[in-house]
Image 1 (spheres, rainbow, N blue to C red):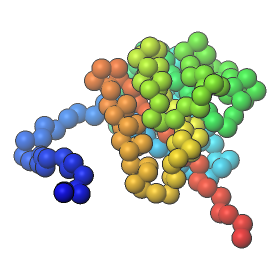
Image 2: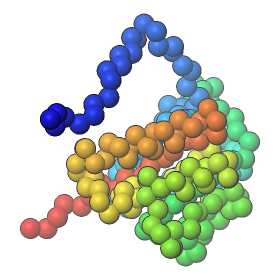
Image 3: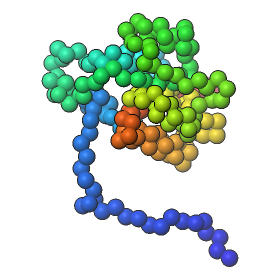
Image 4: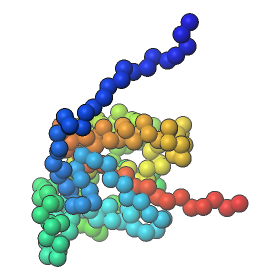
Length: 196
């Protein structure tokens, strides 16, 4: 009796045959379309505020950086956009008392910002509702804030073997760009040291 699992057949990719692909940038060189972007920092450093400011600009089709920026290279490589739809998921802040007031303060078109209702069942990164929402809303940006809130109850973010399949799933969603042009931004809060 053979106790080995069914192993996949070996497939090798020869880099000589890989085509170089052009990268389109939402914000050069920080946020590429079709890729996962991680915003990381300590609590209170303004990650959510920064992302909500970016969302406000995108929902109105405005440049993320001021057009009088001294960095002409940034402007040349950053795509001009029409107003876009955004999916914004938060596991920490209230929609009515925190997120919407911040969006309004930033000048966002709130009719273009959607939230997947997860009151009945918590949303995770493996959830089919993410892909359904991207397709239904034609969202160009999806934000999960913070990423720890969307891992699921069986995942320890300190174990690479548990995180890797989740990140692969998110990368596949980001690469849906060929069909739906979405960019995924994941916010990670640096964890506070535990008291001993």
